[in-house]
Image 1: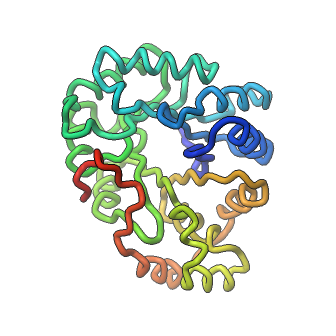
Image 2: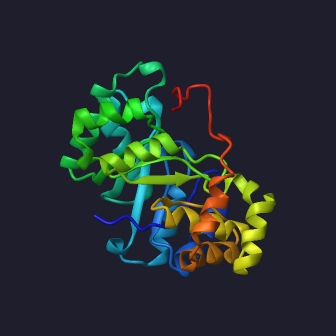
Image 3: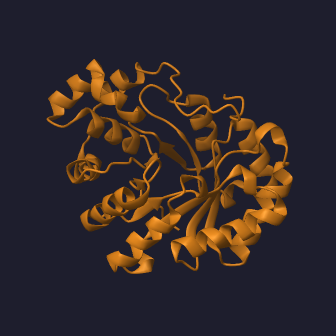
Length: 266
């Protein structure tokens, strides 16, 4: 199974704004769509997909199980509900959105249920999100690294997540970078601005090029056609070793997604 390296994130997009943005993205050529139960937009994602007329086998669709649905008796029914909203018989990838807060639901209870969902044909692949090295180690022991398609985590120029990235690479687990543009902060950074001028592109494109060149899957979000197209074009940019070194120096541990129920980060 191949996950397209550049996808369309739908976090914080809802209603008609989501439908319009996703419709444009699909027209431009996006085929990887990332949603989640907690985003409260699965139905609109499904509507945009259906209206696009794009064959199902050309799309890669990810959703995520929310923390209130981690109990074994809830997980698969919640995925059925997601599929109903999306208007699909199967998603391509289902992730555990966050590890259970304070381990209230043991990972031994909910992760095997993802395997069961795959066995039932509800999802083609399974994975995790916001898992630390400790959580990822447990997951590997439970289901095997070969069964974890990705760990979706926050990665951008100001948060490289290096320890986790190195561990995932050693285990052969793909990382998906969310919030890759640091909610727009990359546009104001002088180093990224200088690199953008040198390549005659934007700081956002430099950032996405860096992530893609580093081997990550990226899922930026945008409602504007021009930005969506620019994000796609980032895959064509090639950064030098000096460029990469300049971005490496921007790491400052600046984590944006850090809710009170987040795990203890590496």
